[in-house]
Image (cartoon, rainbow, N blue to C red; front, side, top):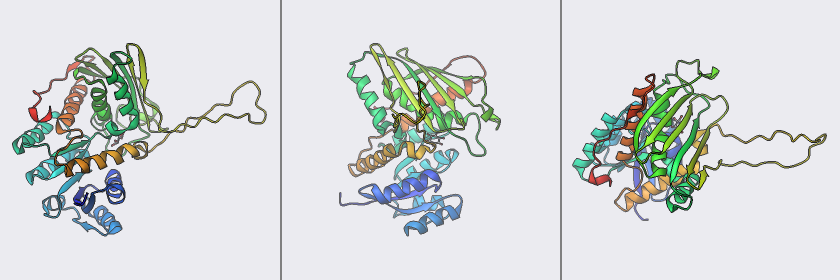
Length: 345
Ligand code: ISE
């Protein structure tokens, strides 16, 4: 790969910094040439670390800069739509962290703009599709060896949330991963969705619901149940089991060493073993993030994006809208998408 793709990053928070390091240190055929952030000092610090250009808080100026060939959007969720649209104004390649937008309506703008350009320009950061555990689950399901999928039981637990977090963000920022990965695993689309408020955890006295239970039914009749805890106080714990007709597949834990020995004084009662649990989501899916970024750059060099599309970002937001609308109604809300354009088939 001779050519080096020149990337500009909008958003120098946790994942922005992480992707910057990843691209500079580990992704072949790409480098970061510029960074920007609504907090200018955050951009300046990251730029100084790697000796690259800082555009301070002039994110749009950075997107427009002729040196920048591709834009990575890792700013806060409510800004994604505008920065994607700005990137598409210059018909530059775009990688947008999840969620693509805050609602389906905004995703439609992005889809319409891509249709106008006539080419896929945007990839959405649904990195779980690159995780070896999920990929192997999908391979087994698709092989048909254990029959048709019937149910998914999943859980998404975060340690805590920063200030300003709202109940709806439990869907738009957190469960959005399951909204993508479940339809991908099943090769199926959602029929309807309901968000259920259950007994609240003592960790939830911050003004948002915790836990919430997300229920989804698919067109083929599968039932999905996702426990969403945005503040569990103990770890970043992601679980997923797909129940098929003749067996099940379950997401492996990232690493789980079980110690076996006979401690002094041990009699007939086994000492409680502890499962190592991570707390940082960037670490839990580090390999998936690496593969995702490598493949994004490879696909740009090949001239054709292959990863999660604006359509995928849109479908997740349509389901998210239905879930947020259903809260408190005890009813399933239809997940109704527009017709899928040829570009995304
Ligand atoms: C966080 O905001 C993310 O962006 C991660 O992708 C997600 O897995 C995590 O649960 C969120 O809190």
